[in-house]
Length: 349
Picture 1 (cartoon, rainbow, N blue to C red):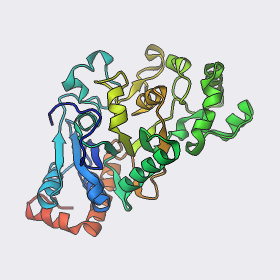
Picture 2: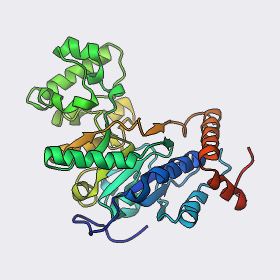
Picture 3: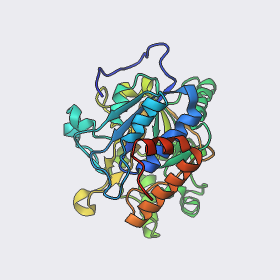
Picture 4: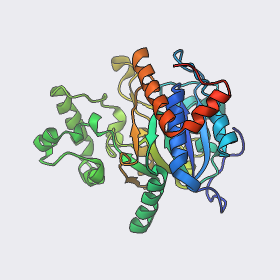
């Protein structure tokens, strides 16, 4: 994948949205994710960008590259493949190396983020099953937000990892601030509490009390006191989210200073707590809000099923997840199964 980096304005007539998947193993789950996306997205879907991490899984018997051939040759869909030279795994990128393009493109989704010609880019995990038009729902949500607020959101999708955030605990928020728990539907209402002059002290109190009560939290990072809102677990969850490249690309590395949406970021004192990171896109989300942009919350569960975590479990759990995806492909996409058999690429059960 190559070519000049685009920035807004985008040419007229470009696709409504491209899609980007970062692929680490899971060939059957990847096929289910991509083919179910294509089935429901229709003409609103442009180029499908598949970023393969440099290592597969030792458990796989299906060639992961066959999917791209089927998508492009049999379905006639544009499909861009990329495999970076560097693999960052779950690590935060080194800021000193972000000007090195080969290194930077090891960040999840980054090749699509830099090269897409569409205004919108759908980020999608490779362990989902789509049964309604999630892309259309996200595009409609972005357009609705623009009509109501006068400006398009920089991203749309499910907001927040509230299960990891102490502000999502009802008892804790009641005891400390006499407020209900924060939630994706109204997370911006907590901006006055945490973004004002007393915000850093309140956030530190919240984290400290959560740890006293034995709740899981990531370490309290020094950067939280510099920017105490959005809260440290706020992000747009990238198992299915839409980002506006026209608004965000000029603000994001390599054109701007924000970490990319696919990047992890350091969290806490590494010498004391080890290599802990904030999850994918948290730093990017916080940076976009610092620039005055807003995101739109849209639950995507009514459009898709996300399994999550199946690439890092035991061999048995991994094989069960892959077998389940194969079964769903046999039921819903038999033409793909027949094509694999005709190519000699269908492994035995």
